[in-house]
Image 1 (cartoon, rainbow, N blue to C red):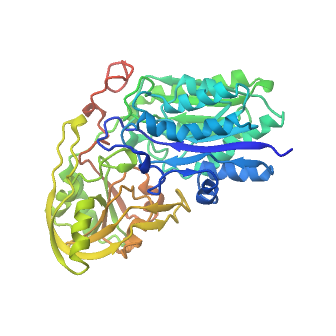
Image 2 (tube, one colour; image 1 turned 180 degrees about the horizontal axis):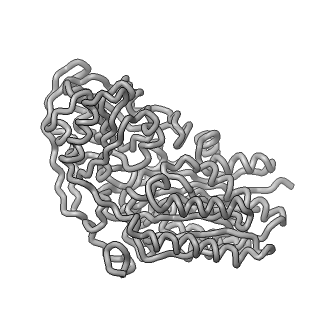
Image 3 (cartoon, helix red, strand yellow; image 1 turned 60 degrees about the vertical axis):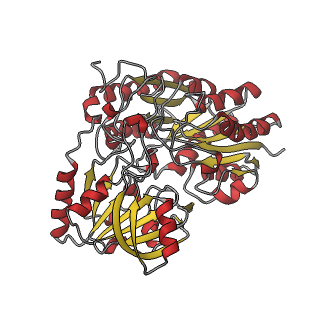
Length: 499
């Protein structure tokens, strides 16, 4: 008989300080969640763990059941009703009988009445089928819980940031589970955490201590001592009791794996603790950063200088309409700037009504208050010409989320003379050149690019940049963790407390 595999995707990175709500319609990259057979059509041949699961299942001639695929941009906690709409189809599929479950999860999802959504998902599956093998792929920014580890069979997480190894991670987790189904191995896991928060601006393996830890994990896998080793530097913008750096390691119990898993896990965590100061982020004043970028651009480097507005990134729960960095760029009179994206559906409507070629004056952005960090929205008065109107859709061609269709909603380009500003109706983190090219802007031809991103921009824009300047504006993705009022976080914890 053909094996029957259940494959599902439920992903949300919850910023509990975000002012952005998470309705059901926010899932699915603007298209809503996918249910049933449409899942395969939407995700096959994409650079995602779910696509890797699909390929593995097809290689086994398995019957594939895809109850749901739902991923939303980061925002505040979703409701219990939304969560149940996403999880119950998975439960129904498992109730109907299956040989294995393959889950593409995030690891930092919060529901309004549950701080550990992924732990609940896996626990509920385990309650239906106590012996069912369950593989889980996780995002790099996971806040790992004991409940998730206790109820999963195999866990593997991304090792890159930007996350260009998503499909690779799905293949790793899925392949280990298939080997277990064949009776070749008996997976066993060890996990742990340390009382520290790592600023996301210090997460990239190329920038700080994570590089050494990820190298240690890769070496342990390559040497055959363990099957999968994962370092998880946390998502510090989720205020939960288990928000902290962690690690999880999978090994083969039949080959002394329990001890090897524990040793590798502890070595990664001990190294992180010794290097904890390297995970703290210290930003220079905004005016100083923009002045530096201006000087670099005037030197005519032949490629754009990137200005990274990292405090208001929708890819971590930001409103994407804070205008502080844009205002400073205009105040310092940088020329040849392209900016993307500013989320302001009201401004888009105004530009659409005016039409291409028309002059408009806007109160741009600043429509979102951020009470969790004591900030009010401040629109920026600005004039320009409507240069382009688009549907905001493009297919990712870069190395992250390759093949996924992105929908930014109705989009318009405002040309001020000095700057071309891409204004969208929906959020989108600019990790692919398509955010500009779909609107007729060649990013390579600009002197400056301002991107509302943190690290993911490096996937598409890193290769074309002459210089990169991080700009500390304002918003709920601030790298300075002292601005947040944590209530549930387990204390003491570095760097907020003396530990």
